Image (tube, rainbow, N blue to C red; front, side, top):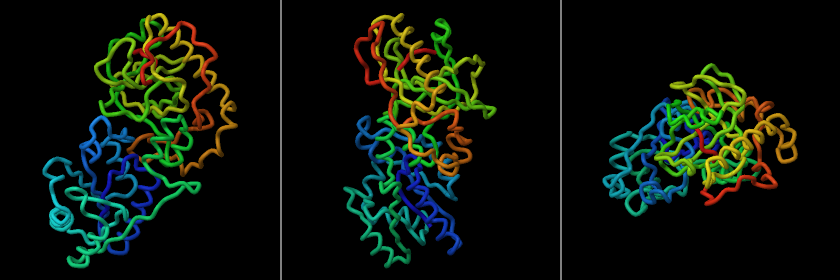
Length: 353
């Protein structure tokens, strides 16, 4: 009982596929197997031009397991794999490797060298070799197809509310806090720093956020996600400042959920201008969480617990208390002016540490 795909984000559409497999699994007493690739095929071919990932590999694996996958086969996508013909892929991976009895894939699924393999070929070989092939069911929300591409678009537009509905949980980051240059402490804004991968990022900029501490408590804060162009950096970082709290978080694992986009990441000509902007960002964050009704006109009815409850062991291991941390459906309005002056606008932060 198997399916194949990227499963980036493990959104409601992916979860529906897993439910479809679980139903078949119960009737046939077969384990649910998910075949994924690392890197994802488009990353292999397009490199930095590939779409940003929604989930890291380890988070994807945790979420797949939480939603019913019994086995996960992660194939290295390399020259050897991409050079397999469609029939070789079926023989070596599906038949010899998995002994597949039932395969569930999208009817637009393409595979093999030059993407020559398709749903019709799978069905034909299945009839010859004794395995069934079934197409996945399209999953829609509010008459809109749920997809990883749509989730990326929603995140980029600052619509964290609708992205959470499509994911079945708030979009967030999870990672271990490391020591960095501690510049934030010198200006009274200490941050907990979580390294990010160098892959293209789904989010860059400055955000009002909710942070889940190791003990399960959720705390309001402001986060910068990106490359810190004013002070320079050799890798992207998520830096989160907890409002009105100062804790020793080194070595702890945090979950950070962006709730509202404040602004893009900017390279300032002077460090003092950056500091002034950081304090304005903190003021805007306080106002956002102190007056969540400001977002009421743009928010649809709040998702129910089942929609925002996170998968055990994956991102957001407990549901986000949205009464305290509402998810915005659009970026916050820009400030009427930008005292301190910024220059050289970068693609999207607030540098700090």
